Length: 319
Length: 187
Image (cartoon, rainbow over all chains, first blue to last red; front, top):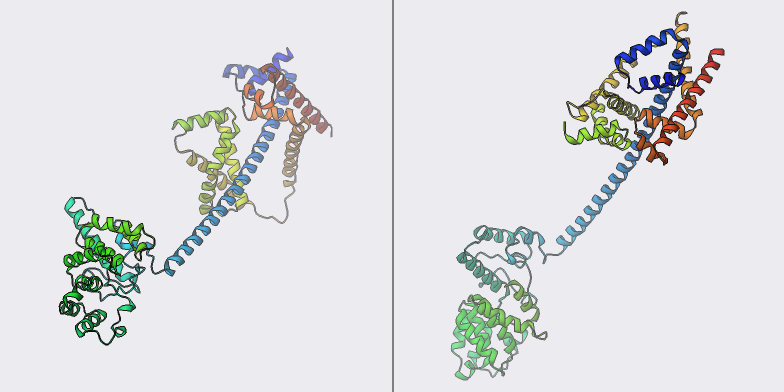
């Protein structure tokens, strides 16, 4: 009977009794003191469990909260350190960029579709006397190594005209512009100290001296005129022909210049045989024959002793 | 109510502590920033309030008072937290220092003392019960874990062993309480 009473009380605390059963339990307790005592004992036991349960759950949550705080703290620290590292890397990168005036990654980022953007400011290895006054540069190309922004502006102006090239005609125009830019960047009439007219002998003919002087003075129009005054023998000299072709190229007579460079490049007696090959390729580039030009540059690039070895390698990449 | 929320409530009803902890942690920071904007409470008090909020939420789910959520869970929790914070605020306002207590107040103080003693003895009874019995009873009757869950949690052989352990522990607790109360009454 006692076990039966306990079961009913347990069912009550488990919420398993319906209204009728609950009423009968309370009625029985009103008449049965021992049942009431038993009920009170269970009630206190369940109160104790509830209090202890709450306390335990609260403790567990407290620990979980503290662990979460520690995790968040560490995560924030890591994030801070990461950001600091990123900032440091960025600063180093920025320093490197500003240090080197031959490297303009900002340009290449803004104008990734135009490979020339990174070349505008680059100084050629051999021909270092490319200046703003170079008559061979296209009108829309400004060379200003001291002021990178100036050339950026010119590139951006050009880019606005040629973005989203979708048809062949436009692509061709871009290629032509590209070739023009490459030519402008790399062509400078040949010069070296041995061409200085003062080193020539006094018994040389005046016409020859005039030609050399005008070439040395970079007066290419006069140089062309003076070349025509030379004797036939002199005019067929491959070394003088090479200089004459340079003067022609400087005066925008590319086809004639190219033809002469071809002859000089094939002449084994010429001291400018190798140089003439490079200039021939440049003329081809200017004349829009990029494939032929590339083939000559490739030959030069395969000869590590060629004076234009590095320059040709770069050009091959840029064409 | 989203399916995930129904599953969450069911998991809490089944006494899965992980589900309670998830609710506690997921909304904790949000509650802190929400409460700090509205109440002048320090972090420790807020922690207490938030724990109390979760306990009330858990008990409501367990007792079947919360079957479905009509709003977002966070809204429900914040409304509980808000009530607790307001009650605490009212209590703080009501608590004023009186220089001399009237004589009749002594009686009330005595009653409060007795109530506190009862609570202490009930708590002591659970401590006297011993670690495993205490955990089994809490798991079964406070967390409402199923017999199967308790079997797994305590590594018991079968469900009969679990049921027997629960009955034995409950009887021991009842005996401890009876013994303590008899002693209290005698004193």
